[in-house]
Length: 183
Image (cartoon, rainbow, N blue to C red; front, top):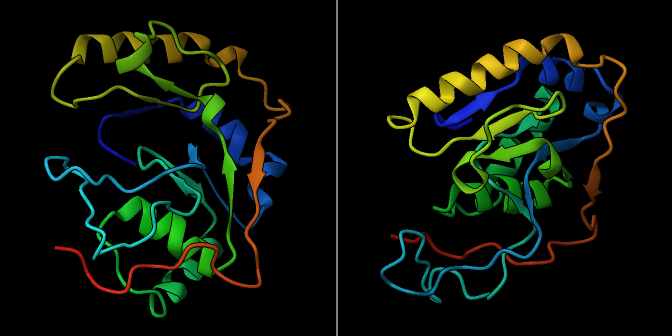
């Protein structure tokens, strides 16, 4: 989890006790149509030489994600077979997860993006809020935290978390991993 993410610990507690977390999966904001940035001025620039495909495998946004220890172990094992790729979210939750046949569970609807929507209250099913720069917005983050505290009694432990699962193709990687390390 990034340092600019606020966690609704009460909703998260409800979520991790639900049946959804029993899947061999990474629970995250899923990016199903990601692609490499080809503009050299981009922080995320990836050359055609470093990665030739114009599409990434389905992967997770890195602000926050959840997984069981067995999933983490599968990803670690996969890392001994899949060449390193410097875009960490794509590497871990895309290439490694695909190699290890680990599904992704999209929990985007339980994420808040403060920097985009200017959220002032946290819903009882909001798991994470990506607030942006950790050194800024401290007053707003404090207000959001107070909203979490006020709403804790309304979090339903029996809430039926509806999520979308992205399953992997077990026969082969759909997108080849990079063949060389990018610099």
